[in-house]
Image 1: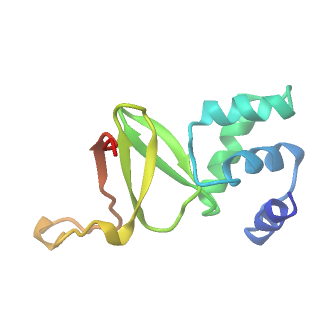
Image 2 (image 1 turned 180 degrees about the horizontal axis):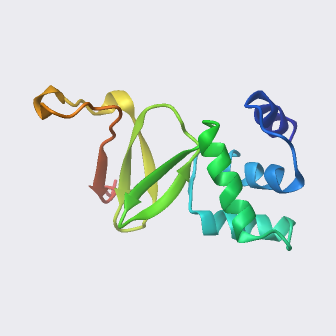
Length: 132
């Protein structure tokens, strides 16, 4: 828990029990959590925490660059603790979201978009894991 607290302080985020509980869920590993999943997990520790509090803290973590908000499938928003550039693979069979290293996918050029200034992009691949 000390590493979570240090990370929050490092990003200029004040400490509250609710904030720490949210951070313990979303920053513990490289997962892709929906806000409702985070809320349900935080409620196990803090039963009185409101959905709004969880949403507000997730949005704060995005603003402070601790999380990235991703819209990956059908408008479904997830919060990604990997803030470095990377792509995603959506397993259509299991619903799992996997990180794909940035260098594993090459985009030749986005200069062909002419009138558009590209600020960011990612590739989202869909399919299923091969059976080995």
